[in-house]
Image 1 (tube, rainbow, N blue to C red):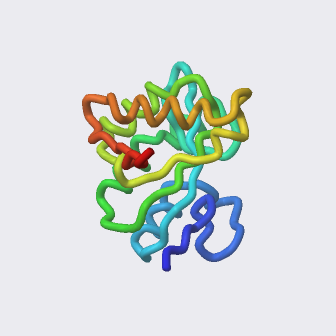
Image 2 (image 1 turned 45 degrees about the horizontal axis):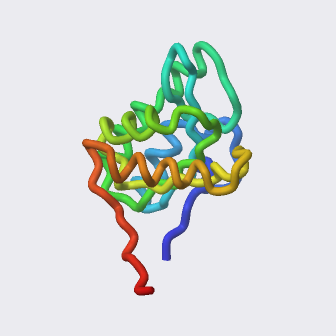
Length: 143
């Protein structure tokens, strides 16, 4: 059985550890999967946070450090909640360059989109065409 620590809450809600690098590392070390949230600041890049942030928080929560922790663990998959749309190609490039794209699953895009399924279709198409990613093709159904 796989248990995910929502926002890296492994021992109940603790806002001081929500989506924090140390909490994610603790979860991975102890064999928990992790659900966390990814956002993008146009000037500072990708960061981990449930809510929009600015400045020092974005820098402190830089997604690169989280990606390194995921890469260094042999732990379970990561559930990455996509909190904003419009940068799907950049997100997949970032996750590929960080070497974790095959260790996670993306979700909750449908809560943000105007056209049902558009973002999932876009991500699937980008992923199968991405130079750093192996293609994930669904088996075709017989007619």
